[in-house]
Image 1 (cartoon, one colour):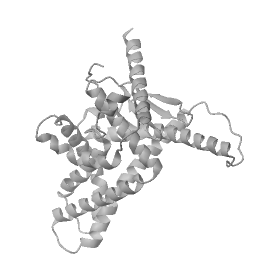
Image 2 (cartoon, one colour):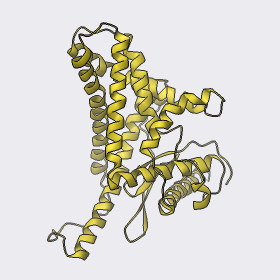
Image 3 (cartoon, helix red, strand yellow):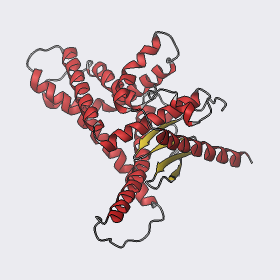
Image 4 (cartoon, rainbow, N blue to C red):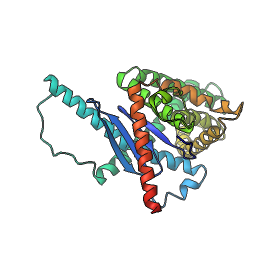
Length: 320
């Protein structure tokens, strides 16, 4: 497979992988009958968002919210497929509840898709706000009166965030469904790495690559903590409520700067010494990715190939 200048990303979903192409986002999910099914959504961006995606700092916030919205649609598809398989298994075992008649679904309506997208954005914002505020409150309660050095307060706050994050990720990784999700996350990274290396996407070739990747959202989480320590150090507060207010006000700034840092470290990953700037994110990925099975890699390859196929069809159509 020839190398390309195209930069692809994706995410793991329940029993599958989503890849974002230039013209389409494609999710492949393996059902319990071993069939691989696809969910394909054309990539569209509102006209008023396009100029914002070219502005440094602003483009990061826009991109993150857009990814949360679109990613939630694909996650919802995988959850529905998984739930249907579980129900079928219960029926086969005679343990399912009495069926309730409902119209056969022909796909998500535009209203449903919009609702899921909005829910994805809200979930991301609330989750990020909680992850930002709780460590600040804990640090304030424990050390608020112990000393006045703002930088030291921020360092301790950042340490508390990292500890909370590691405990949370480790705890959920022990559950079977999340462990498999993290395996699919590893499969997604392996396919992207194999493609970027110009390798033919076979299971054998893909499995040779590492589950870690510089451009991962897990790396973004680490950078947001580190960037937050720096950004918050430029501001002082006199009470816990003022501290919380500043954290919420500065959250878009932290997200925007973190996105730029992630892009910068990714551009330096082939530069000796400087490539180590991306290592904190790679270390966190040791928790959020697991070695995938061959079957999981096959699903990831199927998703990527389908995305590339549709991209080519769209481009050929536009050229003719």
